[in-house]
Each structure stands twice: as structure tokens, then as C-alpha cells.
Amino acid sequence: MKTGIIFEGGASRTAYSCGVMDCLLDNEIYIDYVLGVSAGIAYGVSYSSRQKGRNYAIFEKFVEDPRYMGIKHFLGKKRSYYNLDFIYGEMPDKYLPFNWDAYMKYGMTSYAVITNINTGLPEYYRIDKVDKNWKILRATSSLPILFQPVEINGNLYLDGGISDSIPFEYALNNGCDKVIVVLTRERDFVKKKESIIPLIKIAYKKYPKLIEAMENRHIMYNNELEKLRKLEKEGKALVIAPANTHNIGRTERKSSILLPYFKEGYDFTSTIINEIKSFIE
Image 1 (cartoon, rainbow, N blue to C red):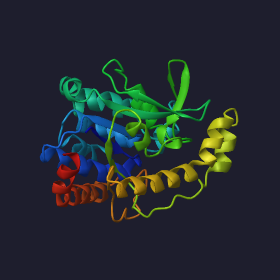
Image 2: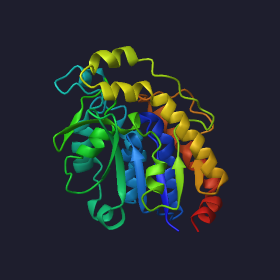
Image 3: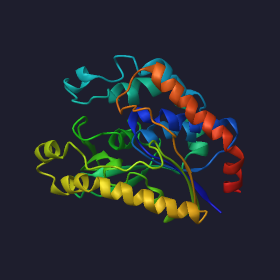
Image 4: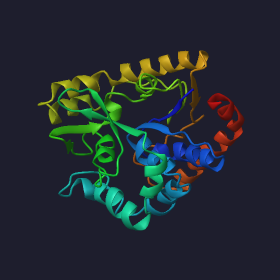
């Protein structure tokens, strides 16, 4: 039986998921097949490379760093709220080295979801060392409006969560028998239609399929949650979700808020470690 682990996106709210990851590593629970969206996989690669503490260090040392994110980056030449050149350049190369050797040994079945802005459909790419500029992670993390589309192989892409927010079905259709799904919203969360749709229609008027995907995103997301509940009942899914997100926003940058949230993810996971082990076995 092959188990996959799915990490939902959520930008700063993914601090909870990072706590989950470190607890799994501390308990030597290594799941080879990792699939994530946006920040879920951006942090998830550190789980794949088995670098316990690396994500914690990001929240502890860098989220408040003016080089990390802020309006000045959005108003700059790159027009990106997060400084992607710092996050996917200086940080993994210099300040918090990413262990490519360990990743190539353990994490070569790690995938990200990205959204093709011409088709409005999700595409799934393996994270590989060949992608030295982390283009796939840049693309899956590129929220509409706040980021510019990322070009890959002649196509333009944005955040994977637009088209497949919780990609467990892809994992089940591609070799996994069951999945652990780590959410960044409460279990009973119901997504509403995006309030920025009028702005989306202006900013992406050349991409009607992307606009359509954004207009229907709440329907897609709520349907995925309903399917996930059914899989739980069938014993094919184990869901880990925060009891309370404390109204933490996507761009929250205070370590004093995010580190306790990281601990909540770690502590909750520690209470169900035996359940997780039984589920995998």
C-alpha cells in the first residue's frame, strides 16, 4: 500500500503544516510521495529533504526581514509582494542551505500543482534539481494580483490553488492507495466566492479561462472537501487540520504569531502519531 501526503497552500497559514512536518520527521515518518500547492509544497520540500527545523528557522528569522516580503517589492520592478529572488535564491543558497543531496536521495517523488493561465487548468510537475531557479515553486506560489505569472516552457503559470486547491485526487489516480492531507483551514471551513473577482476580470481580461477558474474556485474547493470527507469514512484519507486558524492572514509576518501556530501543528500531530503510523501500515 502506497501512501501520499498532500499539503494545502495558505501562505503564512502554512506555519501550521510546517509544525506537522517537523513532528513527522521527529517520529521518523517519511512519506516519499509528496504533493503540494503553493506554500504547502514550497515548505514541503524541506520535509522531503528531511531538514527538520529549516522551516521553523524561516518563520523565526526571516518572515519579518524586509527582504522577505512587503509592499516595496510589489511596487518594485518585479511587482511581487514576496521577494521571490530572496526566498528562492539567497535563502536556499546562502542563509538556509537546501540539502539537494538528501532531497535527490529521498524526495524525488515530490510534486507541485501550477495553474496554466491560458487554459485555467492544473498541471503537475515534479520538483527536480534541474530546476535550479525553483521556477515551479515560484509558479505554484504566485497568487493572482500579488505576483506576476511565471514562464515555464513557453507557458505562463500562477498559483496551483486556483485550479486544484487540495490535490489528493491526482495522488490517488497516480499510484497512491491512500493519502494524508494537511489542511490550512478548519475542517468545517466553507469557502466563499473570491471578493477580488472584479479586479481579476480587469487584470486578466486576456485570459478568460483563468477568470472562469477563479469564479468557480470556491465551488471546486468545497467539492474537494466533501470528497475528502467521504474518503475519510472509507479509510482512504487521514486529515490533519487546525482547530482554529486565529484569523491568521496569508501575508502575516509576525514571528510572535506564526511560531505558536507552528507549535500547534506540531503538538496536535504528536497526539495522533500512533494513528498516523497505523494508517500508513
